[in-house]
Image (cartoon, rainbow, N blue to C red; front, side):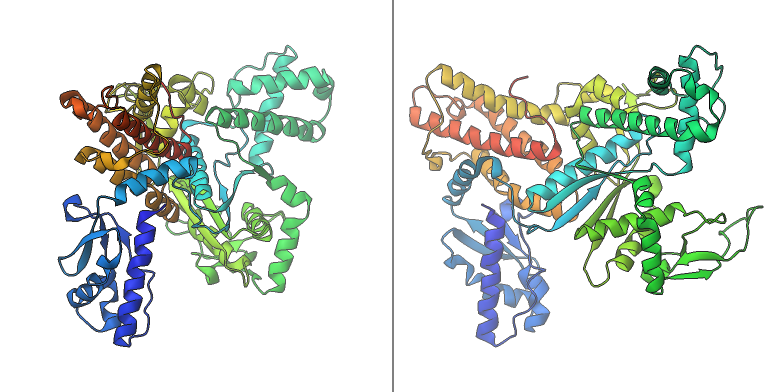
Length: 577
């Protein structure tokens, strides 16, 4: 049940009626909203219908609002309608509306909040996609959590979602990885390698790779030229690094379904085929690019290159596809990969990137526009800002294991995946985030993840305590017995959940779910505390079995909403704390 979606249809019906009565063509109804008013004292549902349609009707907003308001009380759940400000319509619902909402939560259970908004549209969410040159660091955590929560949010909203990781296993960085791993191989054979040379990866995480190579090949690779051992070492190092990355992601309960390989794109001929196809379409040409803005590099060459006409699709410049030695540019792989996704039938290509990849936004959008042809494919890029780590206000030192950075596993091992996931989502992805280890483990209202999980644990605790006294939630609860404003406020908050999920999915903003859960938990804890001062509001009243069983059912409904929201965020709904 989506109360606001239902009333949106009621409001649209009223608009249709007024349009027919006045002989006005039915206008575009897509801009009409039905949402909770900012001030709860104004009512339960507010709509902007008269504000956005007044020009289509040729009448002032307030006059149109009066015509619409006259029709809305015909609905059984409308108690009163008021016009506010320049023409907003505020609707007050009858008391019987809230028991209907609570019963719907119980009836729908784990599915409450889910919708068919996406109508099965195929969405590809690509996130993390870190180079396979070492363990994931804290800079990857936020994008990993955001991408995973976004994928779950879209799934709950009716999209057919594929979670994907793109492995950059064909560039120069994996050759550097192989040479670094080869030193660890020599070390495993007993040689003294000394300090790792500049330009190679110094982290101790490559020691297991060297040991594995020594166990598999003995000293055989030591006596072969680099051209022979490099591909062997590279393949082993990439495979073990990807195993390490998968394990790190699993520690955050992140498991992507598809791991696409850049190397496989080249090996299958897709890069070559893509460029040939673009050439046939007249989108590839030989030309020169203007020099970089600012100071001209000493090695700048004004030379003819093979270019893709991306400017015609919104990019800043046309992009080169071939290097001076005739090999493909990294961008050429991007082009083939985008084409591959489109050929797999995705309607939405969603990329979750770090803030330092802001320059990729236009080029990725231009690729979608150029490659989709007659199909409508939407390219959406979401950037995640930096995370700064603190402990009691002091910056956190580097990881011993990585040597150069704090790893994802360092963070998860210290505070647990629930705290990491919730706090990474308790701020909009575009805003910088300070993560303090001391604060996220504190058991207080100031720690949002504790506050929300504690609310869920409290509902479970009361239901367990009631069971010990032989009481259980009513099978047919009489929710009209809940008349206190704190109880009704919780019902109103739960009614917002399906609308919140749809709005968050449309905006690609899972942080809205975290904010909502914090507010819902606050409402619940406030009711709990109110019961301390007013015993008649307590959940277990042994002298009134009917009311107790209804309140236990109320707790079950609250628990469903908390658990459903936490599931989208990938956070465990704690049963006891």
